[in-house]
Length: 337
Length: 229
Image 1: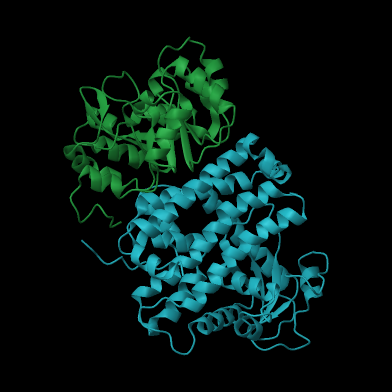
Image 2: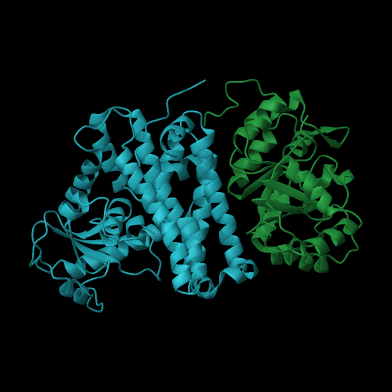
């Protein structure tokens, strides 16, 4: 028995999954509404700044996922849909002032200017600095345009097209893109340990909670649409990837479960994540996690619950990847080596 | 989903062999000896998942003491079945002891029919897992019964015992109702057949009968309450 997975665009998939299961994911719903409201505020604050036609102000992280909480940072940068140049408008200092923030430094990941040609062209080797690599991943996986939507869309499309290269192959997931996404996830997990050693465990609980939940879900939300290219002719891949990656990560995850008619699993995964958002949005829990060390983790009820939810989230994703007879061969063929 | 069960006969070997993780309840490994010996026997079934079954108060005393020595255990998922027999009536004290079990215990399975005051179990938190009951029990079989329990224990999960369901409703419609109502709470399954009221190896007949329910539960550990046939 083998039936084709159903066509399932990512946009709106979370709501469709809820409808199919007759369930609600209140924390995700609330977070999306809060994100939209706060984005409107940011747009109002930035709309009077002079912009070059090829620029966008981009927010990323929880903003791009549609999951902000009252504790979320404004992680932004100015994106230019073109090669590096001086004198880009708006100036970072002007954006920071409009957002009522401390003026950014020039070396950080955020609060600076990033150029399409660097994001698209400098992939791999020493030229692909940690900042360039991270910005590229954030742009593709979890970003949203506050201003300059056309520049943001065009740059994302250019980056995705760069991954596909000149000769994408029919029904073959794009390896270059796949490897960069996997590299990003593994980098995050290795950096987690690195930070633990250099910071002597400061903030371990919150970082561990995010690694096991939002970071892992984000990785899966990149992996699944790429693997899905095994069902696409080459000339359909770019448009499909552009559309899928324009949707929030939880939509991409929900779409995958709907595509393979795995509604029970999808609801368990996203209900677990919904509960995680509730916990991480609670200032008391957040403070408790920030203070938590690896050695004390077992004594924290909040961390125990997050670990349980993280296990549930991972189990559902693994089951989708390895238990569905249509997807498992693709995972075997492409996802490991 | 299209799973390995969809295009091959639902024999016990196919059903259990297609799933990961399948672990043992030590309830059927008591003859192995003390807790370390029972755990070794459980590891032989699977190092990934297991349930330590302390069904009597005395068994719980020894299990609790042993777990607090923090023995190294390989399981990725470990549950403890809370006692249901020979209880001394001091439920509050039992709850305190359950809540204090080491963090390696990911789930604590309780029978709703022995909970005198379900609210008392709030203290166990998200590790609490409520199991549906068989036809011999006065409470805890139906979705409405469990709704009343979960109403006061919102963090609790569900352990779906498919054999218990089959004793209450041979059509297994009840299992689908439980999954429809409590699907997001599902943490683990108990898998076996019931023969004269006792857990027994999964039969050919039940493997087929349970197939559609098991297909909905491929992402959670399946705990065997009897040896694989």
